[in-house]
Length: 239
Image 1: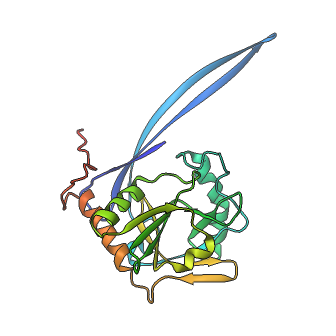
Image 2 (image 1 turned 45 degrees about the horizontal axis):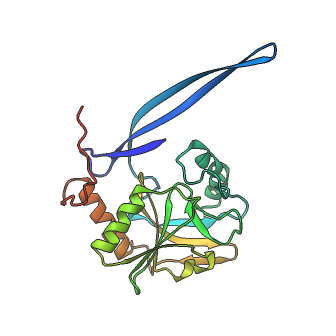
């Protein structure tokens, strides 16, 4: 499955070309012989998306660390964009929304001590004092093209040092800003993260962090053709 971003006239929305490929296998048994008939299907679904979470970029989101559920197993397919990775989040996400937390943060399934990713987005921690952009290096995390784009902007434009490494869950409170990033959301500012009896708050108010806003403005300007695309990220699609 692949997710492709395309430009649209309304700068507050984005059009996504959601493509997926699946194979249907029919099994027939003839005495001792088993015959297989395979059929492959490829679909492309264009869909228009606005803010992924209520309030969009104008409102910080409350997050909770999942204690009862894991998202992806070690040496599994957590790094692949397959439906099963999202299905694992349906029940915990529903339960946490009932508790007032729109987004869930998952830890590694082996030790439950390392940050992996949010329900549908990569984790990014920003340390404005040391100018560091930190994101997990786990092999169970989906490699987000948006995260890679933000890393480039953070390093090239903002002068931040990018670190892809293990992030202990008790290290979360050291960040000045935390964002969830992905194709649909670009960046979603996280206001707080609850982990058991501990709760970490980011920023002194409901205002979006300065670095988060700078990252968002730069990547959106390139996507909307308002800034030079010196990285060659945009591709013109002809009807």
